[in-house]
Length: 145
Image (cartoon, rainbow, N blue to C red; front, side, top):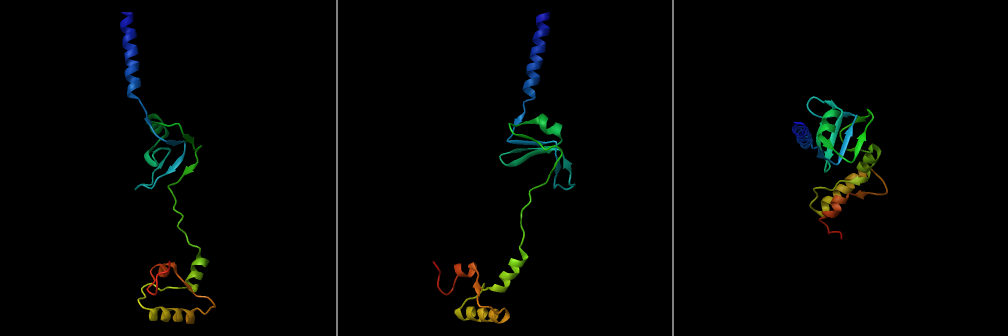
């Protein structure tokens, strides 16, 4: 009888351990304040990343129970925000480029180029006039090597 009980216990442990196999991922971040950008802007605690993509986001318990990783980061309650794209403009430089550079897009003849350069010079007089790279690469006058 003792052998049967021992066998059932060992078999149960084997079955339970094989059922709880965790999914391997590259990174787990937990104990964080993760701001999502879903429809309700939920705030979660943890996430798992594999091959550079989020595979799951949820509570610490949900993520740590289901996933395993050699790289785990305890964020210590700090915020984690979605990726920011640094699309910005240096307004002074942007304005100066508008003043210094002649917009020659759409010109189809040498005369049009001269006319636009003259108009620009009268509007923004200076010693130098810049021509944008787009025009140089699609020049109607002569391709520039």
